Image (cartoon, rainbow, N blue to C red; front, side, top):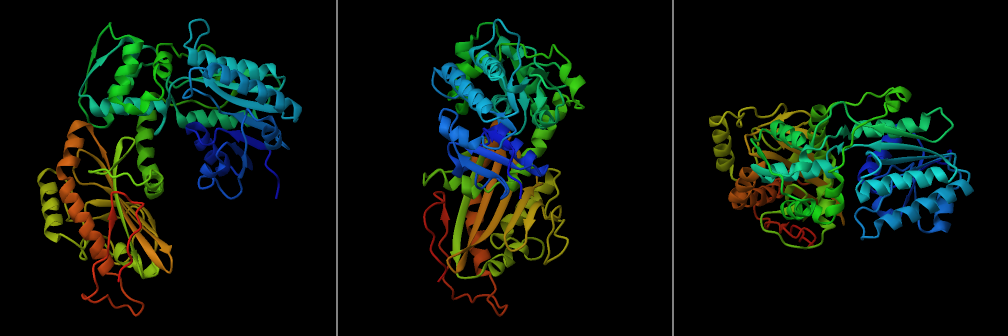
Length: 505
């Protein structure tokens, strides 16, 4: 098998992680360098090589660059201490020097769009990094991007956080600063196209979406697509400092970034040089489609995410009402059973329809009746087949969005709720038996969604806990019979998630 000739740095980050999957999907051999390689093991394919390295550690960098033709530089220190500009310069200088020494032919770098002169410290640093990479003597292809729109991107999460929580928003002048937001898919298209670029000289390509809008336009479009009514009230007196404090209060995830992020949004990020459209056969989409794709991709990503892994990594902290994961609320519980995975999964694949939901049948029927009253689908759809499921099946007022027999079932709620909801079931082998994990995920729409979740959480907790016990009691034995009623109820672990569960007796 051939050795990787592409080095990817920053693969644990937002853009780098998605670029890794794109390169792997294209059948390219990739070597990832990371300071914490264990964070990449579950994300990368078996063909991808993962090495321990740091751009500030020259020996590790030389080892990572052995045999490499093209190196992606997707590193920046925005979230670090106040000396991030010095750190960025040092990292870029070392990376460029080692790349030249090791015979790397091309560096591909993602920077920030904006006119030189009155740039924020963040954007100025991003552009200085590009200059230092070019000065190394290695051909450097720099893509300067405007606001990146995609599920999980910093800008998109900022928009979501504000729109979800504030029906009325007092907006400073920076929400009207012109920008050309670009979809993450289009950014990835450009980064991959950089591998095939035929030119021999270093180039800077400005990339942006099809529309020129401000953050205010993005917030109103997000609200429109989520069915939320929002009012923006512009004010002239909200300074950058006050804006950063305000965002830190409303959307705490941005307290880490602080003024460095807010300071950047005051700069226009408009494409002035159309060279990218001439050099590459890529036509970026508009902001409306970018937001629609981000929302659609969220549902797919939720279906693909192992929330149990993410929650367990947070330790054993209790949280009434579920654990906050970004904008979502996650309530998960598990049980260990003395049954192989294929038997433990049997009642899960039979769930719904005539079999029902294993607990609180009258509550499920009441929920379905209320859903019909408000124009929802109710429980009348049942299921296509009593024994078999496939992706896309309707299941009462749920839809199957992911299914792997004897292992995993993910349902997306199609009943009327102020937000979006998913229900996961996962079965994994565990010490001669199996672990069953049940996870409810809710993405509330505004304050009404939060009120809905916390108001009905006691009922949800009762129903989901009872459902899990019912699923366990419905597990057939090896001969096909169901366990007798004399079997003691299983112990279920909820909230902490990492606490050992007790096997069914």
